[in-house]
Length: 234
Image (cartoon, rainbow, N blue to C red; front, top):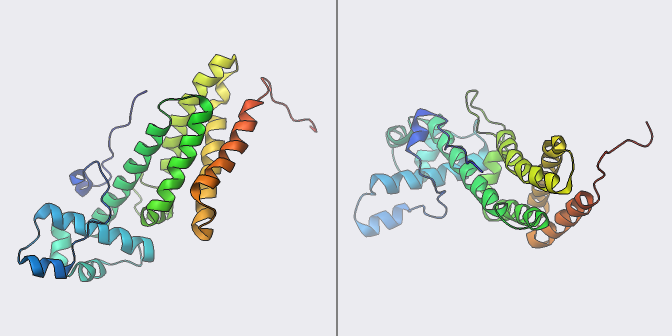
């Protein structure tokens, strides 16, 4: 199974690394106690963390370079130096979030039985929703960058393609028509995603419990797939 190359959403996004940083913001007080300026990589990580939180809370339009600089306790030129502006920072954040969640899903479906892969994919996405709410909030927003593929819809398309490959193999083994694989894959991804959005509003039950229900519904349906589905009332 081939993996997609890392995105380059904007010129400044090319500087991003593969991993998503969380909880690495270095406060102004820490800077003062350490009596040193942050290295470029540390400052960049700080601005990414702060930008992620700001975009999650206020959206792209509601967030300004001035707001980000204020939270980081730096001047606006520092933000421009690292990212070229708000658009560049946003592009890096989206690129990193998408790469992170894609890797988690790919790992979840890379081995195991079809049922195990369904369960792992459901739990992997729900764990992301729970553990990285700011990142999920950013991805859930409509992308303001007209040239950027970094939206939730493009992420879901990529995920559906990955899961579709699993369905192709499973359907082949069962002697079924593999042309239906994209339909089943998108149905499963859509179900997981919308349940994830619902969970962010309720925060209960625990994601492991939610994943069990999703997996049970999906697996019972997949387990009894007819070779030639039909509509009984048409």
